[in-house]
Length: 194
Length: 317
Image (tube, rainbow over all chains, first blue to last red; front, side):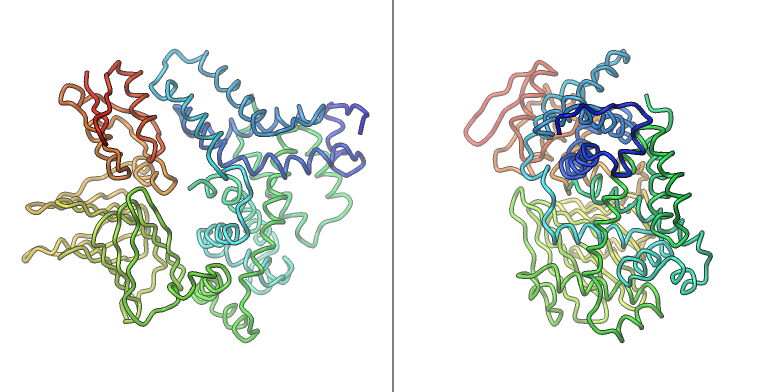
């Protein structure tokens, strides 16, 4: 695809709807190459940030920048680019903080950890993934877990789940969306690092 | 940078995925979704992430038990049963080669990890036990009680609670009984420690007159030959103490001497800290198997000397 892609906000919806091949290429690339790096990225961010709670937000910022860059040209390989973006965002932040902690000194070490850890950037093999999913499932609140089991394991529709559980479809939607959230963290984020 | 936190945006993305997954989805809803996505690239990346996770969760179907009668039962009694079935299926489908070991419940099994090693065991009831470095643990699931003996080392337990089948951890004359929980137990030569992350455990220090102590989340009980003490730790500190499950040692104002002692549990190359440097405070996260990186960082930060002597690294001012 040689055409340049406009990166204006307007385009995003149309691109996601599949009107533009290049955009869906970028989406597939993002899912395939970037998301598997999340565990390593989060580890790096948590290690480097004084306030660990900011890691999630920063991760999201890194994603947005990497995604926007990819719409112009897909960075290959993805990993060094992702970590360069992360480091630049961190440095920006450090410049605004007066304190330099011993953790900041250890950052270079951390970057090596994150970059060199064998296998950290690969999709876990199938059984490992199933284990992650199962663990994530077992940690969901009871009703939420039940809804996800009925949907994904038993293949019931939201309406059937509502009937089965004696709750409204709206509540089923809410249980499922909580489940989506928890499963995403388990597959890409915290759950993956061990 | 982002006007909304990642958490909020991700929650919204998950809501869209859930709505699209339901029956009410139509063109108007799709148009609303497109409009939401067009508003911000942050929305797009969060959506891609949630979408990928939800579609990968299709793999969960592998946990479906074979017999349809069992499915019906599973659904009727909802969770305890469902999870048991799920856990059993996981063990059968997933563990493969090691299945014999994990499924055998008739007698005692011994699990060991070498210095620097770690291992996770999944039991048929869905409980998980993670063994840290240099640990010996025995297990007998054949009786009514689920019994585990920690002969040496450290283990983290995530127990599927079952009032009919108490889960007990024995360490010498001490006993920890699970009452629905995540907790860790560590046994060194002279010291025994129980930390509770979630739920509740009963800790019996094994002394004649003393009654078992109930431990709640955040409680850390430390027992030596002569006394037992219980302290409260913030959840962050507890989480950090479990960094070993990811191969990490996390220090937050730990003295250099204590940090070195931690490293020495994981490595054959031992750190020796001179008295002059013993009390320096260490903050940071390190790979438990990378002693040299740790020595290098402390050297740079505190301006210390470090010197290799045989199998040891000596750190001094």
